[in-house]
Amino acid sequence: MKHYLQFKDFSADEYRYLFARAALIKHKFKTYEKHHTLLDRTLAMIFEKASTRTRVSFEAGMYQMGGSVVHLTTGDSQLGRSEPIEDSAKVISRMTDIVMIRTFEQTKIERFAAHSRVPVINGLTNEFHPCQVLADIFTFIEHRGSIAGKTVAWVGDGNNMANTWLQAADLLGFTVHVSTPSGYEVDQSIAGVRAQKSYRVFSDPLQACEGADLVTTDVWTSMGYEAENATRMQAFASWRVTAGMMAAAAPGALFMHCLPAHRGEEVDADVIDGPQSVVWDEAENRLHVQKALMEYLLLGQLE
Ligand code: CP
Ligand code: NVA
Image 1 (cartoon, rainbow, N blue to C red):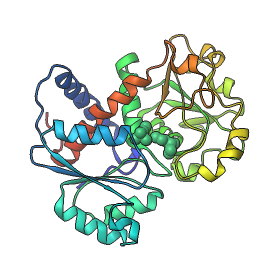
Image 2: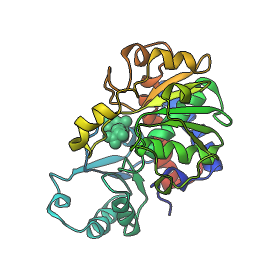
Image 3: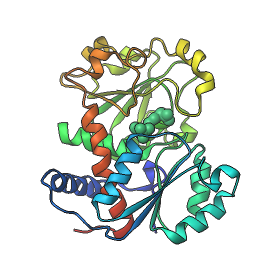
Image 4: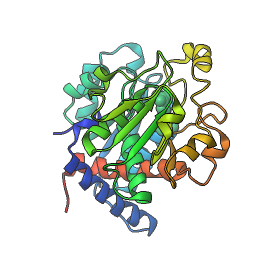
C-alpha cells in the first residue's frame, strides 16, 4: 500500500504515468465520457484548515469516478475533541477506501498514515502541498511540454508550496530560483533536498525571475500563521510579483499561483489577470491530477 504524503513519495516514472493518465482522464471529462474506475469506493476527506479548491476537486473527482465521499472537519468530529489521531486513523480507515487530510504538522499526517489500513493523501500540511505541485507541473507540461531542464522562480515565503517545488525539482530535473525575505528562507532539512542541485537562492526577487520559464508565488501568510500577519506584510513588501519581474523572465514565461490570491500583496493584478497567467487552468487541473492520483493509489497502473 502506498501513501502520498510528500512529493518525493513517488518516482519520476510514477509521475510520468500520472501525468499521462491525468491527460486521459481530463480528455474524458471534457468529452462527457464516463470514467467510473472507482465505483463504490469511498473517500474520507478530513479538513483541519479551510479549503475551496481541495474540497471541490477531491469531492467532485470522487463522484465523477463513481465513488462517494465523507467530509469531516475538526469542528464537527471527535478530532476537535482530542481523540488521538492514531485511533481516528484506525476507525476511519476501516470504513473507507482512501483518505485525504489537510492539517497542520506533517507529523500528524504521518501518524495517521502509520495507523491507516488505506492510502492517505496529503491535502496540505504546514510543510508540504504535493497535490498542488502535481497540478502545477501538469499545467506546465500542457502549456510548454516537459519541465526537465527548465527554471522555476519562487518569489515569496519559504512555505509548504516552496518546499514541495524543491522536492519536485530534485526528482524531475529542473531548477528552482528561490527568493524569500530574510527570516523566511526555505529550510533544506524540511524540504529534504540540497541547495545547488535543485535550487539556488537569490536575495533579489527580480534576479530570481531572470530567464525563468515559470514564475510562481503564494500568499504571504499561510493558514496557521495568521498571528504573524502584520510582521509579514512589512517583511514581504518587495516580494510582490510585478509586470517588471515577468518581463525579466524568459519570453513566454508562465505565471502560476496556487490560490487563493491577494492582488496587490504577493502579486499585481496585471500579472495574475494578464496573458501569461495560467492560474485557472492550474486550479482546474487539481481535479484531473487528483483523479489520476486516487485511481493510482487504489488500483495501480492501468495501462
Ligand atoms: N490551492 C488550494 O489548495 O486551495 P484551497 O485552499 O482552496 O483548497
Ligand atoms: N501556503 C498556503 C497555500 C494555500 C493553498 C497555505 O498553506 O495557506
